[in-house]
Length: 322
Image 1: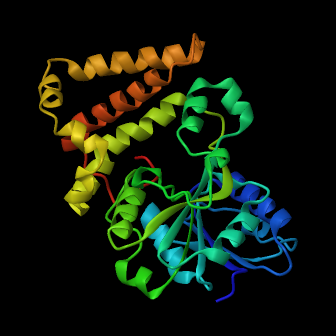
Image 2 (image 1 turned 60 degrees about the vertical axis):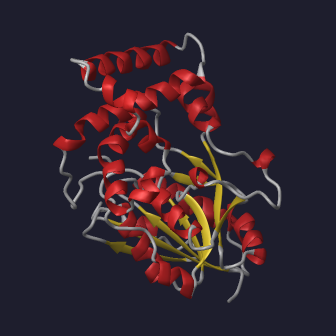
């Protein structure tokens, strides 16, 4: 296995602009002594393939359409189609920083087959300065200043949007991402839990991406937590209850006090009013209080939890969060 042979896998859906940004960034980084293939796994978003496969690329691009618009299925498909053992997973709204490839190549030089890499996630500086909720989100990830050669991570720090590992027989035996996770959330958490329980370690990488979803929208961010409560935890409980029990959200759900307050009449309405209040405070930017943003995430999650019994999401999702 050569260190400079890399398969980079991107699951995507209706984010053609970001895909092109990723490709342009990688073109600037690709060295002549590196064999790089990019595997794009879409679900019939009707991208302009001529633009994606333009003659200026210094690497092979493989483009596949998959019927299942499921994140886990797309990642798995890409891993199985990979020509090389060194695997990088990248989400379609994650723009590689200028030394992204170099940092991963350096990591692969010393990486053993029982270690999974999670890279740095940051947000565009212009958004951090302009939006308090982006400042909060940016603070939740480990930074390059915190890194050292022996930094191993806890399960809750896993980031499949910027991940590297060496594909091996042991990987194939354990299995990749569980495709029973429909909708949004927890598929990477369960993946990490399963691998750590099979002797793997999670290590920080200095490979950095800029997480750019477009113009920030705090309500869209909270919507993710609604779906995490409605669909993500439901999936996690069905897939592996022991894994679910390690999550802080499951611990909250099973708390006696929590069960009592969720039975309060009009509790959902109260949560909605509180959520709207936080959205307003974020918009007017009175002050930056991280606790408020943590509370907002919890409120949206609880709203999803209260809707859980009403939902029955279909396998053929039309977007990531519905």
